[in-house]
Image 1 (cartoon, helix red, strand yellow):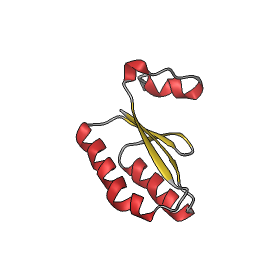
Image 2: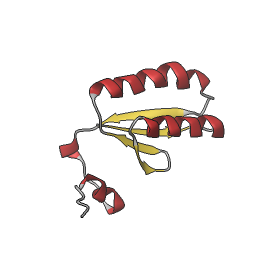
Image 3: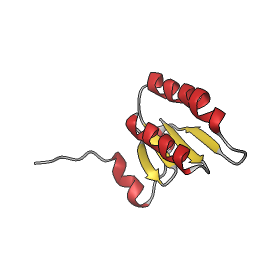
Image 4: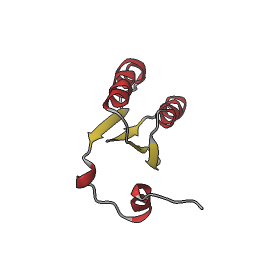
Length: 90
C-alpha cells in the first residue's frame, strides 16, 4: 500500500493528477492525499508515470510525496477507519 500526498500549484495539472490517481484505483483520503492498495506492478506503473509525465511539468513549489505503508502499522481516526471495514449489502 502507498499513500500519495501532493501539492501542485497549477490547477489544470493538479486536477489531471487527481483524476489519474482515481482512474488507477486510488481512494481519496483528503483533498490532496490518496491511498492506493493494489499490486506492486500497478504501484510501479504509477511511480513511473509520475516520473515521466508529471514531474517534468512541475513549477518550483510543486511536490509529490509517496509513503510506502504496511497496513498493520496504520492508525486511523475519524472517517478514515471505515474504509478498511468490509460492507455487506442485503
